[in-house]
Length: 239
Image 1 (cartoon, rainbow, N blue to C red):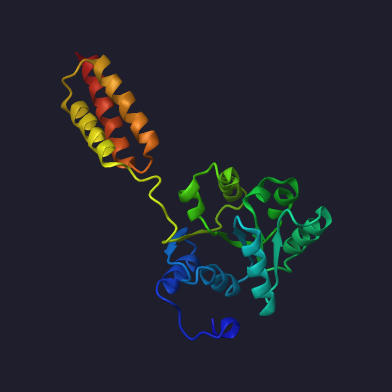
Image 2: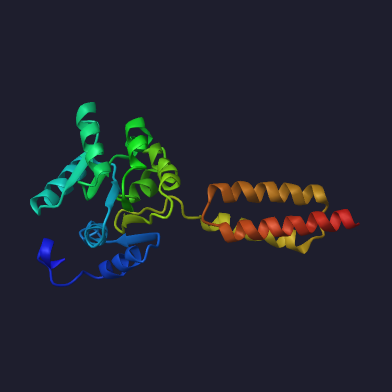
């Protein structure tokens, strides 16, 4: 921290996030704007061997981070649509050869053949998903390629993932409205009661699953609905 940035201590939460990453755990970091998110993946990457792949949606942010790192004599590259195919090939080859510590990529780059062929040859120590609050603000339709991160994990088993969000930007897009929670509770209560005909129970189950599909955070309610339906069906068969 002091060698590259001149700081003598971390900001609140930074140290906890860095420790989690260094322990090899997948980590979700929610930090305020200006809270020093980038240090939470830069410090642990510089503290050990291997490079960090940083998935970020904004070219301007990539270039700014790369410039800042290079100014501190830290080898970093950014792969985006503003580069020629030849420039991209050279940058990815350098990453595979171990000459780079930070590789910044737009989510769309994860699906390209040039990236997929080389990433398996890289010594990757961390995957950082920056600006992840963009998903909660606009949904996957904003950048569908964010879903490709799951494929990246399959190619790099055992590599921890750090997901970074800004508190001021996270929206309640996916939070569950109170009336829908109430309806889910009614459905659960009706299914758990177990005295409705099977056809009615199936209709309740279908309604409940549709609500849960729209409110994916209600996983606990989903499990309870499923368990109640199974019990109802078993009871009906027993009768």
